[in-house]
Image (cartoon, rainbow, N blue to C red; front, side, top):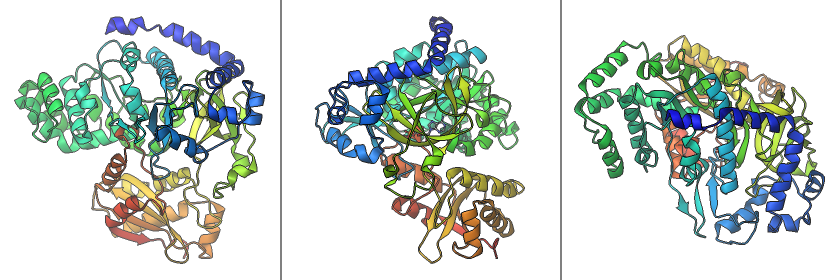
Length: 583
Ligand code: AMP
């Protein structure tokens, strides 16, 4: 492995990054030219009258800014088996299913080899910078990665989540060999049809190779926290398996059993050691370094909707650094983390100008329009990557090599600075407003801030919020906010939970909300506490729709059309409280 890491020329990758970021504007023009040349014969571009022009000015004049909705008719034709050049010159044969947690259902976006190439580029870039700061020589990675199934749509198109499409790409192994310590887990565990069994075996493999584990990772931080919360439940079973050298009978998938039997040998000494370590921990603080003494860091996407899991992750990781990875989506990669020493709360992502063409709509232009489905009528005026202003917030518009042109991703970012001439972004939030009844406007950040302040009251009782979401209840006049909480224990007093409810209500400081609350234009906020395991049921519901654990993001607001998730939540309510804060 040592040789393989050295094969990867870190300096060359960093040099290339310096080159493209110093000349970001020109690289953007070239990238757009390449995308438009490669796809000049696509029906979509032909119909817009580009006539082979590839400059940004003509592109912007001819091609409209769109959302997924506008592209759906084209995407549906591809899914139904129309193999002509619809969105791309070379017809699309694979689709990615994005997690779609915001809209309540997964959505399809085109995937191709060119998009895969950008994945390799971004992985190599962030690895070069990460490895410069936190060198890893050999060893193994404990990666909580799960590949969901790829399936054929009725038109014969291959579909899977973006992470699955990447993991299953024939070039993936080769591209990663140079930069990634091999996973502790065999492929049968990663590609298993059952994520419970996968997770159990990932943990088991990690323990078997505990001395060799150099890093602990997952795509999103949610999977890391989920893995170690599961460890708290199953650690004695894991020790039992290691002691006896026999895999727990709950793991039933034959291919996993066969693969694990190659690794598992009776090892009472290791079982005793792990048992002793677990018994010695106080409330599982420092679990990760205790189990994996040679791990250098914990790695995965830790910003945005993953921030609420950081507290728990830090608890498990103790002094071990938490490194956030890159910024991207099923629609394409955007930016990479080249400053891995920054804690996730301060992390920035540097835009890679050669992997897509990026435009930025100043958020001010869109303000107040998002509740209006025809908001695109306002003709937003995006600026290019080198015209963005430090300190301003923008909604990202991407043009990628897989048939998305001027596509609004639905993310808000803030420009923190420039790395050479390319912007450094902080991920702010999804762009849609979560909570709005009349003149109030609250985003997922506002909800996160409210939940964080109320959770401090719980912390005094040694309790924590496992997960949360929200809902607007308009079933009675006036409408009101409902916040659902899953809490780590059931001993919270009525008094404290009542205070939490008031604190939530008072923490929404948006003037529209407070003024409406005062005149009862918005009713008392309701806190509903749900049973342990409710959010796992939500995760399972999404997996049933084709999502992958690796890409799962808890929906932070459940709309009225998301009936199944709402039903899961409502069926599991154990207590509810109404705020008296504005009485
Ligand atoms: P999906 O396509 O399902 O993987 O979801 C992509 C979305 O995840 C993006 O549009 C972002 O909202 C979010 N996301 C991806 N990377 C990051 C990141 N580094 N920080 C915060 N949010 C992210």
